[in-house]
Image 1 (cartoon, rainbow, N blue to C red):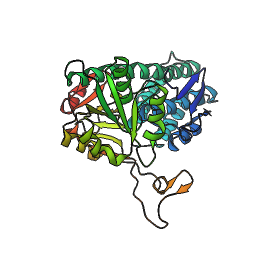
Image 2: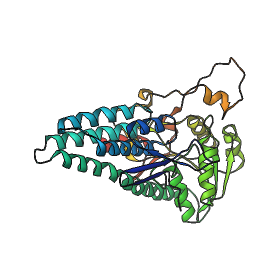
Image 3: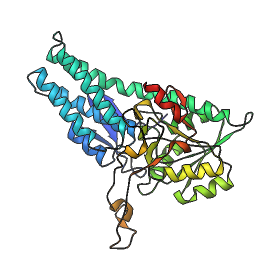
Image 4: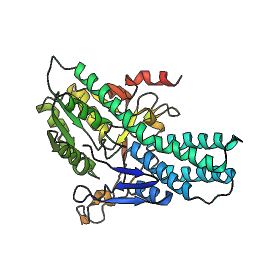
Length: 351
């Protein structure tokens, strides 16, 4: 059974605190928007799909308790709080896309004279709650499309070896996962020989989270440090690289966890297909190229410390971008719930 990073029922929300994994599995209650913003910003919850879901569910909880006296006041409250949630981690587009969609829904409900204040609350919350179920269905479709695409490139009934970076599984989504969903599908088809996951410095999402999920699922896997990728591709016959995405431009340029770009360069050199697995909500139709994507920069402490232990020399300065941009020219395909697209074909989906 897949891990559950998000537990939600009857307007009660708990998240698995990913700062404590793998040493401790502890759920934290999210009581409203402030809790949601803080959990996202501190990376207690992370992964672009999960960020959007937790942020929006935190708003649903707050709306139910809201003491506003008019539909106008509720609409204004919704817009303000959604924009606040978007500021928690600006590079991941899913929260911004969800906010835009939900603001449009709030405006429509506000303008409908047949909808009462209480109706508006109920209908709005129902739209948010549907995000959980839809995300899992989308992830399973991504997994199936991705597995079939990868197997097209290998002879006969050969087993495949996959490399992945960062965490893109149940801990980064509502469940199942995007890139890790592809790996799950290959495993279920009995076509997966082995998975290699990078540690993903400086925050170690691969070592702490992806490794944790792979062990939990009893999938044959090996952890490597980020600097071993070139040697791995040279010596271990990797079939494909599959990563997630926090934002995809319409030309196929992709923002993902720092370190993704160098893996794509190495994959190109070694002739290994490099795939991005992401729901359509990660594609930003307003962004035409990767140079327009704002890259979040994280605190120096993530680089200088492991837990409470300092590993870097005192006085050294740090540069700690959370993401980098992989150009479309290095990407073999964008795996979505609607199928696999060549990067250059993405923009046709929005015409």
